[in-house]
Amino acid sequence: MKYITGTFLFIVFLFTYSFSQDTIKSQPLSPALPADDLPSDPPSRFDLVFNRGLMLVSSTQDSVPISGSNSGTFFIGGGIKFPLAKNKMGIRVTPGVAFSRIQYNQTTIKTFPTIPDSLSFTLTSEKHSLTYVELPLGFYLNISRDEDNDPKFFVEAGGYVGYLLSASYKTKYVNSDGQRVKTQVSDLEKIEAEFERIRYGLYGRLGYKWASLYYSFRLSALFDEFANDPPRGGQGYKNPVIPPMEVGLTIFL
Image 1 (cartoon, rainbow, N blue to C red):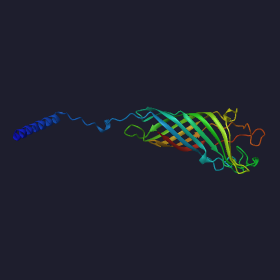
Image 2: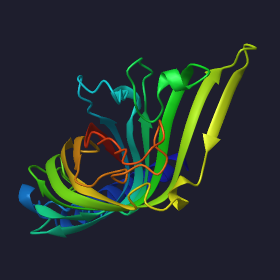
Image 3: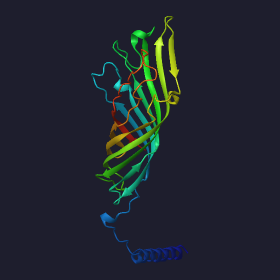
Image 4: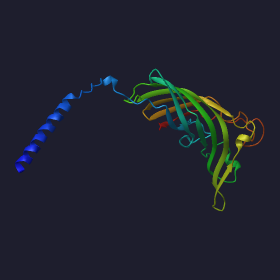
């Protein structure tokens, strides 16, 4: 009986092996795709854009001493891309919100926004905070692209326009009792002819993949030409020109 069983298993093995070999030989091989025809994902059309710019301040600006490392604009928006020429170039529209801060150093010859010898205390912090709804629009050029047709090295240049939503003035100081005091004057945007409602300018980027260096030049003024509430009172006091240039970093997610 064991010989019959062994012979049967041997025949089944030969039949199975022969069938599998014929099946493998009968299957056609898929043609290899040329390297240039490999499939790729479509390029991304949307990015979250985070931009941080620091104000470039002149070292000779003594009467309005602005702290460049603490002044500038933080922007968050949604970048919508419109690729052109097979994503070799395109247009990016980035509606968002910009938060600008102007931090003032305290020096003896400072004349704006307060004059030190006119105060009964010494300020430890003084700043203007401005919030804008903003719309940058730029033209980008992809110098090189990855396997998914997304940009590697790229340059971008364009302009932006924004509208002032809110403005405030904040200070910190230590009073005669040694107590730390914070003050905030809000809703300054409601004062007529104190801040320019519209701001606009130019910007440029030089980037690699998801990060880029950033530069902007504001063409509009931040403050109205004449102050509504001059530091020493009187008429005809002109607001200072705030430095228009910023440099920083942009992150795309």
